[in-house]
Length: 163
Image (cartoon, rainbow, N blue to C red; front, side, top):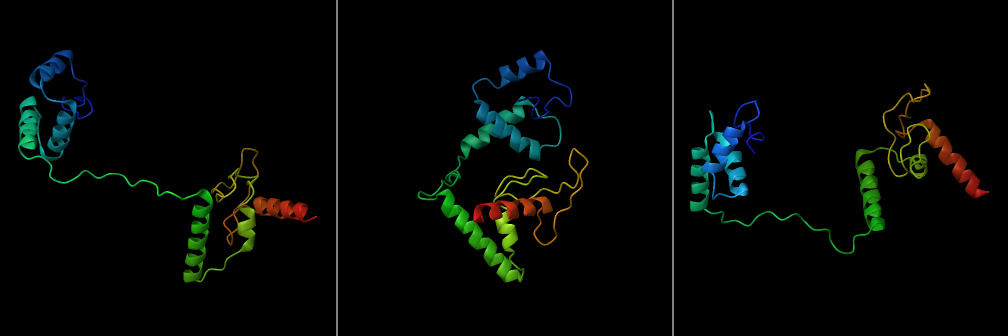
């Protein structure tokens, strides 16, 4: 804790300093000490001493928190991957429509296959990689944002399933 809050400066605390702080802060929980050091670090402009920490703990105990802690939101029941994907797709269509951008069916079909160039997984867009380890260069298509080899792979896979 002393190192985390840099109470002893940039040098690691010595055993003597650690023993002194332990002796002074005996009877106070680690959580109280962390909370006090967090507040003191933001407000204090000098060396923080164990007495400062004890004073801050005393103030916190005298004025307990009256509001409830923030609880993280829990996932709603009934949300499935399919429903989430459908909601994402509806949102993308709405944004493209609002912005006046053309929707390209090539992109939708290409997103269903893995990119042979940048190895992006199905459902994820291609990365900004323009040269692979073999030295091959391939820039993403401006219209779709995907590598041309991925678009070709999608076309060949849909032609193979159509036959």
